[in-house]
Length: 233
Image 1 (spheres, helix red, strand yellow):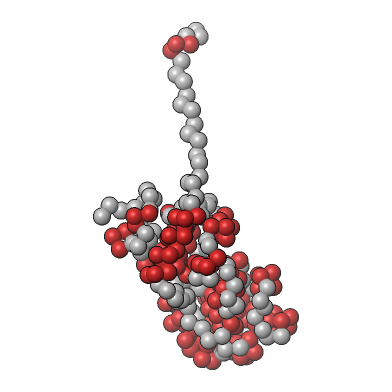
Image 2 (cartoon, rainbow, N blue to C red):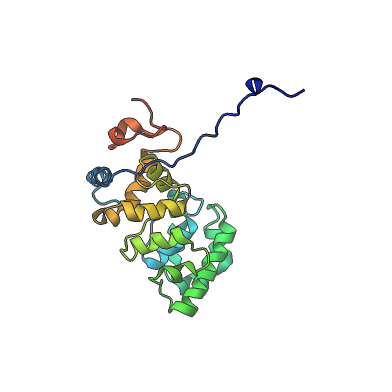
């Protein structure tokens, strides 16, 4: 027996999912102005002595803390601060020196392969072009961005978990994946803040805008934040 139309239940219309609206240029400028005032000269927290050791440190930092990487690389970089010296150590010794870092076996293999390619194709020098950097074993877009920014002074936006979180929470560059956020930051961040932008975002995410319990009571941009994750004072 057919059900009368009046008795039929209407399925609710699906909610339209919209992306958060990016902030205005003036709001973004204010956010970075406050970050600059709080930390005039932000620095990355990985220890290194030259472009080569920076590259190795960033490769080793994947899925590891900077503090943990620094502990492991202290002795490693004392012994090997060039591709030739690292290659002379050999994979077994590199692996032994970095065994406190997650995924150390695969990372040791990548470090040795990276050194071989630097020597064979780049005259033992860390390349300054993104495509060349990304051709090295263990080097992805984020690693290339870090090296280009810190070692060579380029304006790049390395998007790690902290940058991704803060850029979305503050609506500086909302995005569903790291590439969307990176490209959004390229458009949104004023040039005068570009050199240090990713450092400010990383440090803010690491020490203030934390994933589970953001320290909103000490946040320098709390009054500008409308994130649903914002904690009441």
